[in-house]
Length: 115
Image (cartoon, rainbow, N blue to C red; front, side, top):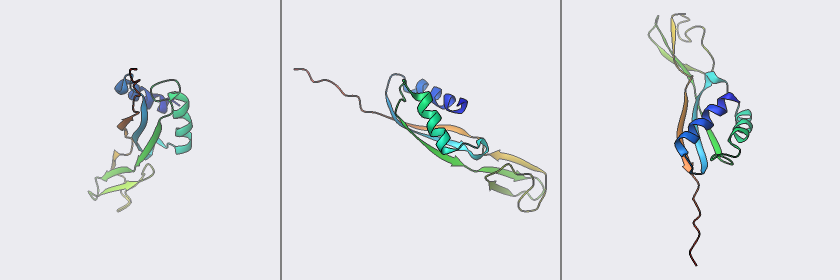
């Protein structure tokens, strides 16, 4: 729920009063976000605000790391304990904890025609 509150807060800050139709969010695999749980939480948190009824598209970013032993770079869906190439433990995480609001698509605002 807190994760969605952060996303909706960022949407509301950028959207102002403009109604939102769709958003795209890049999320690192290390956050362990489940799409169905995110969708339900997002709808609940966004309700009544500019993102009420908006669709949220999640783009998952794999975890990545660098091995100090073999100097190799790698990607994974879990927190690595050892380098998948050489088995070394001198590894540094370089990605996978991202949370990026990539785009916001706004709804068309209906204007009333003058009679």
